Image (tube, one colour):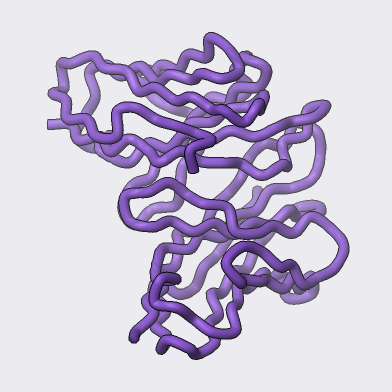
Length: 115
Length: 116
């Protein structure tokens, strides 16, 4: 079984400061990792994904994430937070292989960027 | 965000009503999904359709009945729901190749359902 943990329900950061939203995962096999963002009353928007290759993945809106296989982590980062980044962030994992369609999500982390 | 649309955006229904949620994707994808999002809980995968065939029914009660008439449209028919079914229902689509579902899923805005 695969699982995702987002250990922080909420992260507060001052505008202009770097931000990190944490994610750890557990799968049997090679993981495919995703970050999504959800603004109030909206669906999930895709930010970035790791499939293979370079451990540092760059995505939309200046976000990036680093895949760390030994720590089974995929933390989301941004060098300088904006107030408009305030939203709910979800980490998700699936496993490679035919017929593997289960995308397992974490519970989400609410990011608040303080002006 | 207009790649996947959902209607209605909000729905209030009684426990004896029958209603349907509609999802349409304009991305040319061949797989579609229904998820349930409840407060304080992770997203729950309900159904998966690939090439209009259901490939997953994730232990969902029979009061939820999906329908996929073609690769662009997905419905969720609702009847005799319970108050605990109140949630945000999200539709998503992706492109699968040879049974591999690892491509990115794109989500619609959701239908906020309240069951009284």
